Image 1: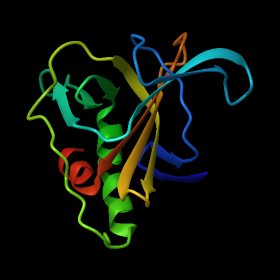
Image 2 (image 1 turned 90 degrees about the horizontal axis):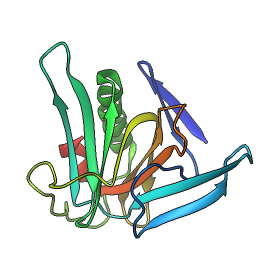
Image 3 (image 1 turned 90 degrees about the vertical axis):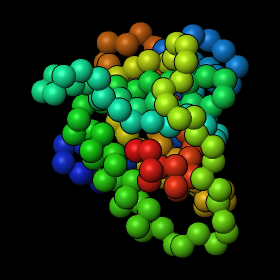
Length: 171
């Protein structure tokens, strides 16, 4: 595990695994053990290549709530973050990208939808621990988000990959 902090937000890069609270559907892994080997039901949400990626806020200045959306053509997730978490995530992405070697091949930025997806999110949760990594084989940036609600009966763990350009432009 590699860890670093920016402000009050800790970033951790480790082997992907997951936890989850959402409507069941295709592409969801289920596990029955936590990292501490406690008996729990866990769901893993993974988007191998996002087509939806957007950071935003809602509400009046001073009372805003911040979030980002990530998903593919069929489903999407909304992760609520503190303003400082979103700012630190953006800084962490820039730091990660600046430390990567130049791309050896052209990576298309990937088509992203021009706004918030329609319908209800597949998962909607408060983000906790964040992890950033780089998939060198695909030259993709990987973001992992663990549920920030310690009371969640089935905490969410979201993992998705996006191109360098998608991450830089949208988060």
